[in-house]
Length: 72
Image 1 (tube, one colour):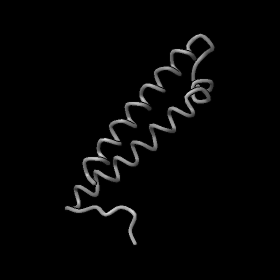
Image 2 (tube, rainbow, N blue to C red; image 1 turned 45 degrees about the horizontal axis):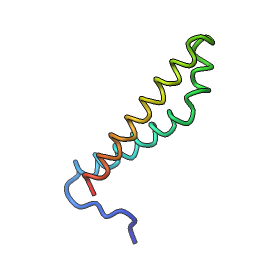
Image 3 (spheres, helix red, strand yellow; image 1 turned 90 degrees about the vertical axis):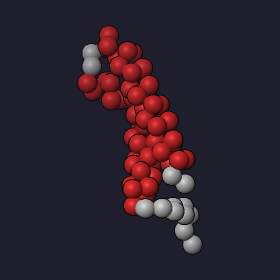
Image 4 (cartoon, rainbow, N blue to C red; image 1 turned 90 degrees about the horizontal axis):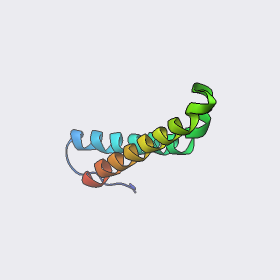
């Protein structure tokens, strides 16, 4: 029994997998934004960089979910 039944050609399957990967990276960026910025930036830049990483992660998650939704 398959969890996801993906109908269509190989391109649709590729876009589905790409959407899942984008969602995964987006969630990782949202969750780990603070530790990533602590390693890369000085104290003054951490808050702005954290906000930027969380926004990028949110947008990646939204784009990935649109790809997944449109290919189901």
